[in-house]
Amino acid sequence: MLIAVVAMFLQQTCGSVGRVLPAVLAPLIILELHADPSWVGVYFGLTALAGLVGQLGSGGFIIRHGAIRMSQIALLSTGGGMAVAIIGGAAGFVLSALVGNGIAAVATPASSQLLGRWAIRRYAPFAFSVTQTAIPAGILLGGWLAPPLAQSLGWRGTMLVSAGTCWFFALLLQPLHGRLDTDALPTHAIHLSDFRTTITGVLAVWELRVLSFACFAFNGLQAVFIAYFVTYLTALGYDLVAAGALFSTVIGIAIPCRILWGWVGSFYVAPRYVMSWLAFGMAATVVLTAAFTEAWSALAIGVVSGVFSATAMSWHGILLSESARLAPVGRAGAVTGGVLSFGQMGALLCPLAFSMLLHVTGGYAAGWAVCAIPAVLVGINLLRRKRQG
Image (cartoon, rainbow, N blue to C red):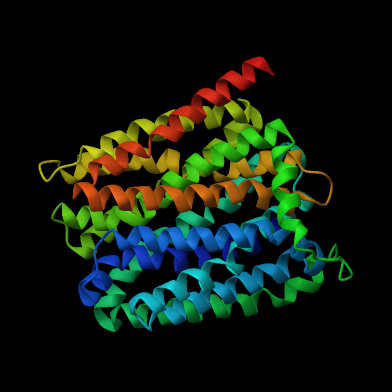
């Protein structure tokens, strides 16, 4: 199990660095291309759309080729997305969103397939949570390293460095393909109907349906936070390096919190209750985030944003472990992909709604406040369904 956890940790860390770079470097890109800040939401909406398609179709490919092989392909795709971004303009970033997040979306379902097979069931929430700390770790690295690197290499050079790193890690995983992909079925048939089967299979089970709607709300809030937080801080008067540093520091809080929630969900409190608490916590803090002004101190902004990170950035392991637990034997990747596809819908719709409100109102407050509504509804639903079940 340890080898599987380490391999998936490295895969997720490297991939998340690449995916967060456009958000961290957005102020520089917007300045050079003379773009409207609302286009950041459009870019991340496109990434979510590509990820939605990728995750819906991921199950059959994971069964056929194995989790490690698909993890390698995901890293190659992420690197490709960063590489084509250097074209600049609408064409470059549309290609970046589609290439870097379509096939790359298979990364998390592949990780779930591997851990669902190797992790001891009782410790699964904890094992999944440890692996999922790789995502905030990667975002933290991107936020800390990208701004100073961009000062030396420019945003294009920084993108290329990230691309090369993803490709390097894809090669490092090669020795594990033969060792861990022993359950791969090369003769497994892949059909277009797999997309429909994945969705209907998730919606047919009420427990998975609840998790899917939770994933929609949680991932939507996370996507808005990642896409707009640095740009939001620069609008409040922070320079890019300071904004990136605060963003990374806040994201770093999610690393121990993901482990903490996994530990609590494994040994002390039912995972559904833990997720309900997180839903209410992220809703409250996103409303406070909407109230930020230039008069707020860096400490106050950091505290609120830290709680935001401890909730909206820290739910992944416990939700994914529940999805894998409810999946039929050998189908953890497909079921997780189905649940995550609803998360991608949230990551598509919430940044687009935020972008529209930013464009219409000229400010950030309305977008933050509106994105809190789904989390409140999910928190109530998790409690109510638990009582009825």
